[in-house]
Length: 299
Ligand code: C2E
Ligand code: MG
Ligand code: MG
Ligand code: MG
Image (cartoon, rainbow, N blue to C red; front, side, top):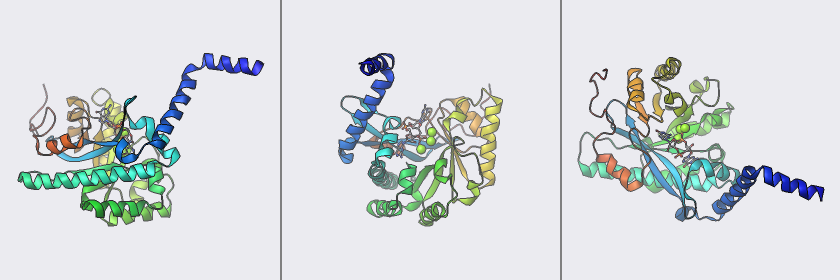
């Protein structure tokens, strides 16, 4: 009886935890029972050249539209999908969608006949569990073959946690991918692993500076110094930098002034559906400073 009472009390005093666990179980159940092709969708967020507002690529971001819950964001289900292993087929599906879309952009650019447009690349997030899966290389090969995408138009985003252990297998796996012509980006750069030596060890092409560093740009000299330092480091190592989460013109200006070439964020565009992304490919440059490259912005 005491046990029951205790339980009841626990229920009464921790309703949030209780419902959080139930919610999680329900989400997991929904994930497990959903068919990937019919349940998920992929959105695309432009990655732009900061000085011109021109689109260089798009990041593919998965969504789970749910009849009762609305649009479920990755924060709420990626971890669950990693735990259950479902991230492996889900990630492969996202990759196939994204690669097929990039091929459509290429056709669109060619048909559009606009000589000054390059075909945007597509950048796909890869979770550690996917990357470690022994079939990963074959999944990539299959996606390339199925879609016909140029390997140079595909970027894979890995987080620093994948590189935590400087292990021969990880290096071999990454080299096999880059030998195909695929580029590798480090996502959320600066938030994970503290050693920088891996930047020399692994065949990395792109650093994506985490939004948390970009947030206070323009308001904090320390933050400015950090982002500028990362930009210079990347430059010295021959890496490209993309700033994540650029939300206002002041951040854009700061980034341009320190030599950061690319950015991504709500200032330019939120993640959009495939159809809208296709239209953005031929649309005028994005952002308020679009076309003002080289013009002084003070005052
Ligand atoms: P991420 O790869 O760092 O993606 C950037 C996130 O920042 C996206 O959130 C994007 O919508 C959001 N974002 C972009 N610009 C802004 C901005 O200006 N302000 C703010 N506040 N947010 C901005 P999203 O789509 O919710 O994705 C969250 C995370 O989920 C991603 O972070 C990525 O780690 C993961 N994820 C998304 N799609 C996939 C996928 O297909 N596979 C895997 N494994 N992970 C994915
Ligand atoms: Mg990413
Ligand atoms: Mg990121
Ligand atoms: Mg991030």
